[in-house]
Image (cartoon, helix red, strand yellow):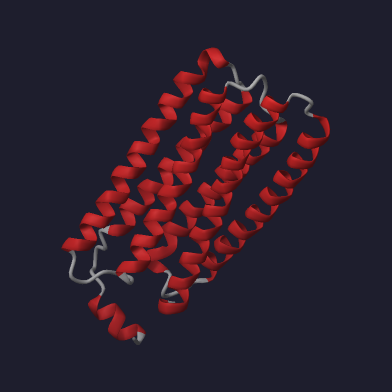
Length: 215
């Protein structure tokens, strides 16, 4: 479809962009809470942190459902329905993994949280901020996609950094953690953090697909 035809039929005020922006803000808020939770880990306050993160996860779910509902009610959408649905679903997944990590911290009650977990939480925050910047550009992407492309590349680089952190964490964990139960707890918790960065990168891949189609 040519740019002129696409522009002609695109709604003047696309309703999906503000909702996607809200979803990115939820991700950032959840990531900030997770950083605090891990940095100041204390079982006495764990339930309170989890409750706050769970609230953000519920907001993310509600926004993802709102996108789905709007897709069913909107005749003309700014991008393919499948792409919009995929984008909102994967953005929601990032918040879901943050929540899953917090939940495991409460349930597993580890004796400590490793520095690698703090580093990964900061990388999740970096990814969430990056996604927010990319979402801000979606409505003008057709005119100039270079900024969005750069944000997608940044998400890929963040995921690579997270992979390195996770691999070194696993090596150190199996070499130095002598308590088998603690080993299982920490591995399960940190795995959720690494998965969050994987999903954030996948958000970038979805956005790149949209660029190929429309930019």
